[in-house]
Length: 78
Image (cartoon, rainbow, N blue to C red):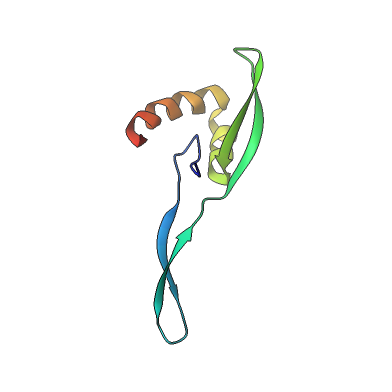
């Protein structure tokens, strides 16, 4: 599924607008990348599917704090 595991960002919908102003549906995909991080508390590597914004969040807060916030957020998303 195309959802960031940290921020919860997913697919958005909108319109393509042509020169004649005809509107057709389109999808805006999140900028997802697969990235591995080393989780020091557990001594293992984890693989996350992240948006660019999610990577910035991990760099700012730290991995364990970002995962803790993501668990609280995931109960609201799903």
